[in-house]
Length: 418
Image 1 (tube, rainbow, N blue to C red):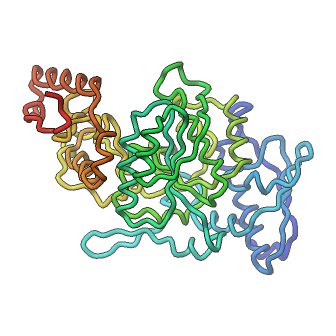
Image 2 (cartoon, rainbow, N blue to C red):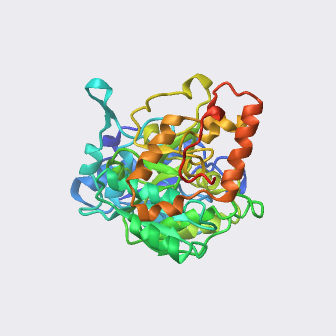
């Protein structure tokens, strides 16, 4: 950063936007010099505007759009050719600058207590909260099928068990039946109906064909912030503190990429429209929402991995964990708990899924299942297709004499068909 005191008081900042390389749609999205220019401008604006609550105008000059991860589309006053004029919201901008901007450092400082307990300090961010009485909610999305209705029921119960004070909103398309919607309401969700959105680069009938429906979360304008959570997560500790983080905050998935299964975002119709418009040209690296959002939010804030603990074990010797780490939420990759017998994690029975196998994590999900109303248990029954898959996998595991021996377990799950 430059010596900001050398600038004195300013009412306007003008900067040329470096575009960087990467082709027409991806120009400069991971260009570090481009990021640095925006951070210098943002710091200069906040330092001057904060002194006497003045308005500081920012003028960017360049053919490519300024970074919307830092300068929001709502703050764009006017565009005149290659000139972009902004009046930034100083409280939001300052809150963002209090954290590392990028994908390498943890967003929140860690506080270590005795007996291995770890907490994450949000005190500085709460002081700078842009809203005196923020409207915040946990949000999940169900579309195209009812395969995750059971997961959403358990997710709601797990959030309630942590004594969260936030709303719980479920976005559902017309594929979810009236009976299931009533069960989801009973579980604790507020239901809002959406039209699903097709992933432009996904193959027809692929698992991610309609995953862009997740973009609808930016239309929840009645909330200042929402935490999106996929329905195959289970919350073990209160996550409310992480609402203090700005958009977009998530957990690292691979290198500079984040996992879109849990994200803190700030709803905005202007952001939603831009995401929809860019989706026509910006190609997702995996054809789904996660690949697309990583292209659109290149510089994001890193949540602790324990807030979206991916249930994946690349080393075989740690799959048999008897205790979970001190996690906030488990993300159930592979076969989901409600798609297995409750006796053990059925990922053990498929060689290509053993990387996702862990009985302790599996049983933690079933402990939450046992706490929900008996009236909701029928929504977690085994389908004929699920059970047939498991029987075939158990038979193959037995024939191959898998060393873990789970195929030997006598199944007592009451949902099992006789």
